[in-house]
Length: 84
Image (cartoon, rainbow, N blue to C red; front, side, top):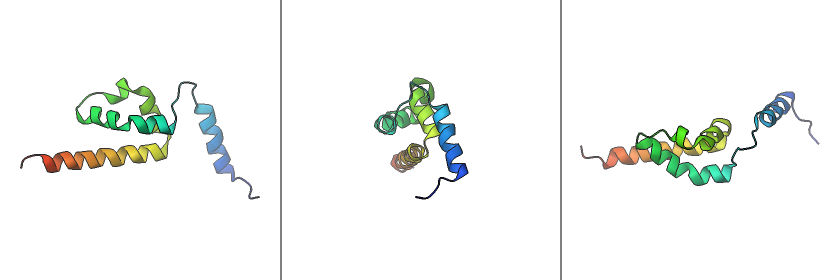
């Protein structure tokens, strides 16, 4: 068995300490990403409307990556669909 590196252990403890009882998991966040991104593209305050999704995106690298990929794809689609 490989011992856990001190930096890895510190990160695990930091995440546990920062966990709040009302947080959502990755599956719930992922299920809400399309609506969150749509709101942002419409100029609405998605963070205010969906604070638990925003919080999850701040602490979860995987979901944050998915969010940025979806946002970029929809922005590119919107730009390409706009009349020149």
